[in-house]
Length: 230
Image (cartoon, rainbow, N blue to C red; front, side, top):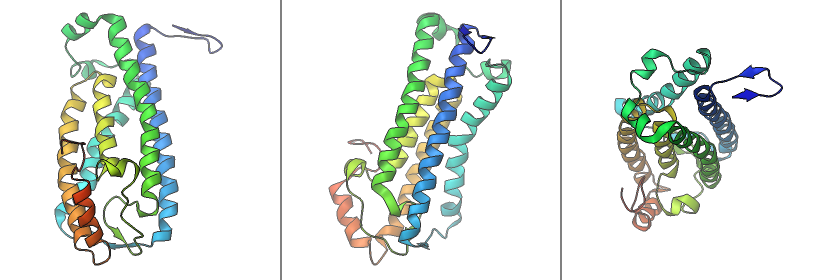
């Protein structure tokens, strides 16, 4: 693969790795911008008045954040430093050669490229969720001046669509990185969200302002993370 004007020559595999690296970097930048704008807007709803007090409640967010963010950051840093090639230790946790042979070079490249494109498009979903959540956004807890229970857009289908989006992101990492590592991370993140949503909803249920409205919302939208499943 020759990139005109840059005087660079890349192999086919390097080109695919470059697409994956670029999509992860672009996604992180876009999402960081989304979150910064929502945090700024969230000041209108006041500071957090209710936060988890248990050790589990305090640790669950840094746990899932580490699991979901460290693997892609390690992948990007390692592959970029290694001239857009996966080093031997990374290939040791890659899918078996049988999968490569079954799909062929073109088939494997297409799957990884399409997954990378889907990751970039996923940022649009993330933006929609944050726009609907607006001033109420926070990683866990209740603000001083909650306005109303958000039940529009993605919130009409699941009660925690932001977490649903993260799970989809983790799912895309499996073909993108072509590795078993995201296969391990996905259930860990899902389990963390099961715990975290229970903690969050208990805080909201007990809130004197938002509690009754949220109980009604749970009746209207019975699914937490996956429509018609969970």
